[in-house]
Length: 490
Image 1: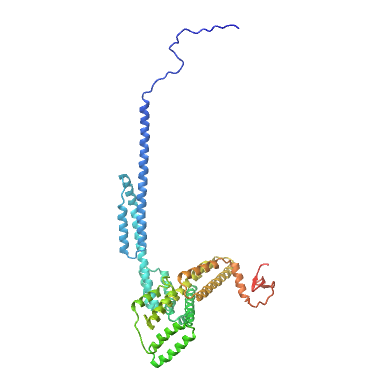
Image 2: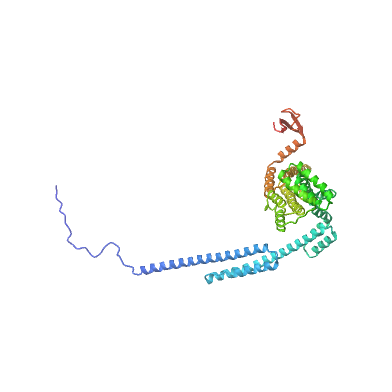
């Protein structure tokens, strides 16, 4: 194998090189620091702006909260001077809000300078409306007084004052004047209702030429009166109460007459199934009454019982517990016949009057959800908008069907009241709402089917039809299913 000699150069390398030369930049550190300082300064400025924005937002929110609270207070404040004080305090509180920096304070002050004039307008408008509302309420109260007393001249003079002072628009004035005589009769009936519901019904039945709206008022009042009459009939079975009330009514009878009536009361109690203990207490009272003995009522007990009697419908007093408390006071000799009668009548009148009013309100509320167009005038306008006679007839038939369904709701609520004579407000509302939802769930077709079934007058206890038998009503077929039930589906 050949040897190739390797020669190493003995020369020193030259001072030149092909690589780029390295040179030091002594200004780079200071330039980097300068750039970092600018970034930090900008960052600090951004933070300050964000803090200012949040502080301004907080002040703005606090001022709006002060205004909203003041406005809500003014809404429920009837006195004009008190409303003005509430608003002045709100403005003072808003102006008293302060910021940490002058920048934010100046910006917030500019906001207040724009907002306060708007608040002034809102407060002035509210004050004007509240004053008108107060004046109208006073006009209504005075008008009610004239109507209840049948003073139509006084009522018409009051309406004229309302028109001249701008409380009543021309249309309102004409409407109230035209209906004054009828509304006066309604007002007098309401006053008469508690003492003589039978007479109230007679007056209502004698009122001719009523509008649709007036007929609605009449129906509510008649329903109220009949509820009271039904309740009074139910009370006739309570012999113990009858005897107490009878003794009160006959306090001024002669001694022989009291002896005769007392024996009659004792016989009635014995035949009523009263317990021996209660009979003994009542007989002692009757014998004292026969002898003309009177005792004084404890005024504290009387006041307490009277307050509870008024509180029954508000739910503060349980009717059954109240009756027990009243009888206990009677048994212990803490109230006499006259005060027993007065408190008893107050309690029952309060409860039954409130029940009748609540029933009328429940029917009215149900009317608004069951009847598509509840008002007569609104329905008349709706019918005018229909083009074809067929559509108008269909709308009228539907309305009649819905009002029939409403009458079923009212009848069912009246039946429920008669079977729950001592019901309180909470139980009544629950029943009324429960039944309302049930009636709302029925379709027009189901209601129509139920009405036609009613018209067929089927007696479930003795059906005269064979199962599967067909009957045709208004061109529609119905099949008998048995047990008094029919169906229109095959």
